[in-house]
Length: 241
Length: 177
Image (cartoon, rainbow over all chains, first blue to last red):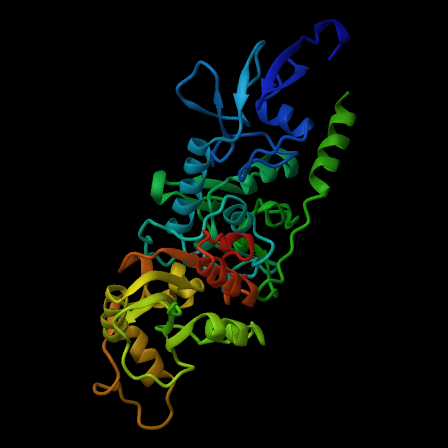
């Protein structure tokens, strides 16, 4: 971007006067200024999609709440990132995620490394008020290195984006709608039989829960490494200049 | 002044939460000076008293006896606390939910038994169709998540209540801790 085209906007987040480049999102500006907004589907290095709605914020003059990851800033914008109403909605989202699949932290490979679990703690969720949806999704263990357990999936779509945007394989996608949505490989074929999968493992390491894991790990052993992503993205942007 | 009465009960759980309660170590002596433990697996009372101030419930509601107990306990308790992930979210006991009680019993007593496979039909209580956390059956006043919750979290919640403060267990524990 050449210097002439950069438009600086001024705005307020939580009462703090800030300036940022036009076109940036509320989340980006908040993060650059050390203001914490909870996120789950968002990941530095992947395009934002606004799927999980945890980053909802209030904007002065609007009765709605807005997802910070996909809402661009404008001149004079006033954003509130923490309020009783926002926290209530955010806690409800976590509870709904917990109630939709079988998130049994105590026996999960990602116990202690899980973003859903740590968000529950940070947002103060101590119980689930909604009835559990009782389903038993089949585990796909057909891949020789990795495993998919839909029972722990939160449908954030990070695997879809990293596979499409970074690896360029687009092995992952969504199938179905709403509560019947599932993650699939290729045309809903077993992962191990996928012809497009390059076995790179990026999907495993961006997955926020224990839904995509390396084979051979036991309870609480599946620590994920995500440092590669912003680095890869930066290097690719460098190549394209 | 009369000392507040504390009870603890154990439904479908592994006793790990009670172990964690005992892990408050010598502080249990200090607690004993401030409260009466009137009913618990660690004391010898046979009947749950009528007027308990605080009850800690470990385990989920999985069989007819659990259901009977938790309703009785709720009616005799001022402050009911779900202790640990089984009581809070139904946790590991709920892993049988997609299969149902018949398949669960068959797995336990027929398929995995070498000698005289037989599903018991007396003495042990009937399994409910669905395992539920305590808050899906009766009103729960506080939840202490964790598998098991750390001893400090349990101690903290009890002492905060004794001091007439509002406990915030999430500061010291989380699901699966």
